[in-house]
Length: 278
Image (cartoon, rainbow, N blue to C red; front, side, top):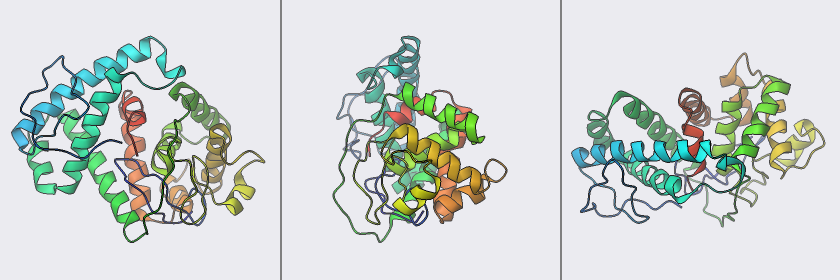
């Protein structure tokens, strides 16, 4: 899998390409005059503050609202039926915009993180570092049109990740992180600039070697194929080596491992990452 152009990455990359395999949230507006209270959820176009005190307060309040909404969604079994509810997507996309801003402004990030509770601070550092990794990975690649569509329901994807883990011994969180980085959980539908295809962005030649005679564009088949490739490349004994075989870039390896670690530590993470946009 080769280094690919990652288009409009928020914390996920979408649509750039690979040598071996693989391969809307809005940016922050002016500071909001209002404060997101502990039980509020931000409006779709809510601005992200650019002062660390205000931004840290917003992140804490929105994080709390987001987690309550995820718990309600999960208790109702909604992840098996389709798109997340607005109660989840609105705060999730707000957090996405805020983290994009912090990734671009390291001084603001440092001052904001210093004011956050430890869990939120740790996750903020991880995702902004991953975003900067992916920004370096995409630097210099030409822009191209990206076709976006709805992903499979999260509940189905979770079943596919776990089935692949059972079969190949590759942690499901790593597979989810690859799916996030490669195609924003299948939202990106067109081939990459190098010709990588499908939700796990495989080059056709690599798919013939590891795709188990499946459909490169089918999420179930693509996730199994990715687990097969990673197992042959050294996982689970050495994820760094296996991910480097998937895409020979230290920045890619670091980004995927950060996302996988986040998903493993925080049971809500895969739910809000799934709600983000390319």
